[in-house]
Image 1 (cartoon, rainbow, N blue to C red):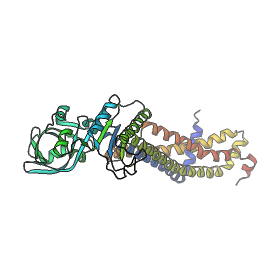
Image 2 (image 1 turned 180 degrees about the vertical axis):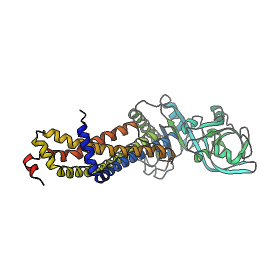
Image 3 (image 1 turned 120 degrees about the horizontal axis):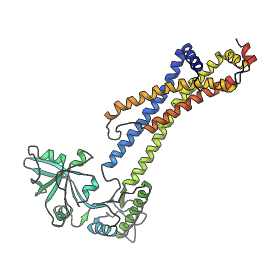
Length: 415
């Protein structure tokens, strides 16, 4: 029930102790402000990490090889494992119904590419058509590679935007132009962009079969890449993905006579597993930020509680008179709690508003690799409001309890 007299008492008490109340309010406001900023930073870190995962297919599984570290079936350790076309073909056929996109990979690091008087060193990758979706690339001009290019050993390439900018400075379009790689002319059929930026756009893609023939690769490949269909439930998708990688690893180890416990011969990177680890880490970071923010708020709450204890001490005689006139202990507790919650809530709202305004104006300007647009959503704002109310109640409870236990006869003798 609204009581004008109660509010007049609260404002009168604040006026009498204005400086003390303001300083205490600042401590509460700063606690909420720090909490909001920390939570905004945590959200920005999550946005940045999610953006990194969007650079490639979210459920991508990549395979590459190393050297054996364990002797097995009479074979010495230290063998270099070489993937073959047959490894891809067998896997692609065996798991055809389970795969979304798939490609084998033959890579040449730092090959010289020439166009007229311009030249540059770029990564050359022989791939299959699905690799566009595995990398999350978008065509800016022309088309991507197709299976006809692969089947017919076509001398065609798709180049990144950076390659196009470096080699075709004065030409409006590189489509249909011939560039020289390893002494052979290749026709440019497409230009792509990649969300990973210039580093990912400094590549040249050609059909896998062509790359193997041009660079004397035979039927060797250097990697495999797959994605599995997306699932509605992350846990279910992770379980399916882990099961696939385990089966794939066992299959490749058996095909290349590798010990089951050899950890350095076959490497499989599961992006969903990486995502799970990072998201778990983000949960811990956010939990830490909540802890720091709440600890800061508690420091302010302790300040408010101390102020309320002092106020109760100063008003001991007044409280005694109230009780002598018939005031119930609950009304005394309500009086002190009311004042405590009011001071804490107002100060907290100012801190919350300050944090939200700062994130609103500064957040969109933060666009680093692992921190993007730090913000605080509505649910977090509601959570901080609840924290404010609880903090105010905690700050006022012990002083209120002490005030309720004051005996009128003792209070009236207080000087």
